Structure formats: C-alpha cells, structure tokens
Length: 351
Image 1: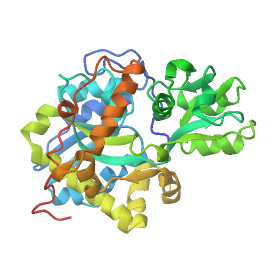
Image 2 (image 1 turned 180 degrees about the horizontal axis):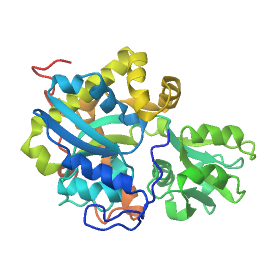
Image 3 (image 1 turned 30 degrees about the horizontal axis):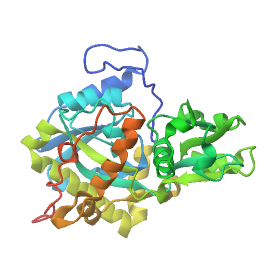
Image 4 (image 1 turned 135 degrees about the vertical axis):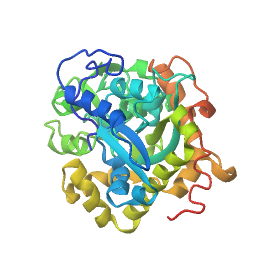
C-alpha cells in the first residue's frame, strides 16, 4: 500500500516555525496545528501525525471500537507523510506522536539530543516493500555498475544497501537515480533502469504489467527479518511527564492487533472507512504486513532478559544510514528507544 499522501518534500518545511515554502496544500498545515489547539476533554488526549499507511490501522480500530475510550483516552490524528512537516512539531510538543519505519526515524535531523523517543512497535513489512529487477537481473551483484532507481530513504533502497553490503559491495557501486516512488511504473519502462525500489500494490502491478517481460521481484521485505519495522515515536518530555497516557495508547493498539488476529473481518470493517477503501482492498494490501502483537513487542524490546530484536535492526541500519548520508554519526540505541513502557503493560488492565 502506498504509505504516502501527495505532498512534496520541499513544501511547508517551516510549518511549525512561522513560514511556508508553498502557498498550496495549506489544509495539511491547518490540520496539524488544529490537533495541538483542539479543546482538551476530561480524559487524556494524544495528538498524532503519521503517513497514510494501512500498517497504522490498529490506532483507528482502537479509537473506533472504544478501546481508547475504556482507558479514558482520545487519540486525535492526521495523515501526513512529510517528516519535514511532522518532526518540528513533534520535537516542540505541538504533536505528541508519530509512526514510521525505524530506519527513516533514525535519519537526519534526528540526533542524540532530539526530544523524541521510540516507545512501541506496530508492524513489520513482510513483503509489502521490495526491489524489482529487470529481466537480466537475477541477483544484487548483477546491479553493480547499473542504474537503480528509488528514493534515498525508501525501504527498498535500504534493503538493497543491506544486501549489497552482505555481498561485499555498497550502494556506491550502483548508479543511483533518485525518483518519486509514485512515478515508479513509468520509470521502470526505461530500459536503462536495471532495478526499482517500490512497494505494494505497485510492486505486483509493475511485475504483472510491464512491457519488460521476465522482470521479477528481486528483493522482498519478507526476507529481511524485521529490517523494515514501523515504530511509535513520542515527544520525550510529554512521554516522561505522563507515561500512563502513552501506556493507554499502546494497550489500545495491541488490543486492536489481537482483534485482527482473532476476527480480521471485524477489524477490516472498522478500519477501511478511515482510509476510504473497501475491506477487501485493505485485506489484499495487508498481505505483506505483519502486525506486531504485545508478545512480539516484548521480543523487539528485549523485555524480561530477551535479546532485543529492535536493537539488532537499529545496529544493522546505522551503518547503512551513514553510508547513504542519512545520519552524521551513530546514535546509541539506549538514547533512541525506551523499552520500559512495554514491560508489564497490561498488568491490572483489560486485554
């Protein structure tokens, strides 16, 4: 599923600092600002801004089915992909939370001093993201010296960098051409392009419909063991000042994930209208997504003496992000992530 709404990287970069690069799409700016200015109810309120991505649907199900209300919590939200719009407000506290891949979160402008902390996991890409190879491309080493098209922080680009590193190469050994992912279908028709970073449903559509017969999915997120993991990120000061408010949110999210596993039809019926799609469309596009349960979260955060799966992911992505010039230097996992909210999260509470 396309994780992004149509908004430019360069537009409205000063959304929370007083200026706009573009007079267009002001509805996004207004929506974000209204979140922080909305009247506060008697209960707790969390204001979130995150991409249009089915992986985040448990948040809407928890809101729609009253899981948050049972906790005396309301989560207000707006779909917004552009980190340049979201992160200034998140850092300042105008927004309380966002959700996105851990690899994207780690990239610049995040620093060890940023007022942000990862407090939860929500989904893992297990086939929703990947790289398409041209007919004559059968391995990542076949791409050396050839054109690879993608966005610099796209999951497919990250996977390719990871795979090249394992094969003894780096992304500098391919001819990287930066494109907008939504243009991928047209870009791949260029015979000069040997591989393309994309995601579902576009990935399957390109393979099925391209004139370049014999093209195939070269790399898929299902083969990368959690490398593309979506996390929940909070304003650190807000979180530290009211941890229980964020515990309420994570309990609601994990309960919604339980519902998906036990009664997917009910989950889809609740979630689909928020995304303006049918349950059947959502069901199909969730084929490459694995929602992380509370038990998964315990493993990702290394609770109870477990080895932290998320730390392994962060360690693997750090070298890649530095190679891609997305980070200036490593940021300690312990600075970036607080696993303690997950331990005993449901003690004394309904699940």
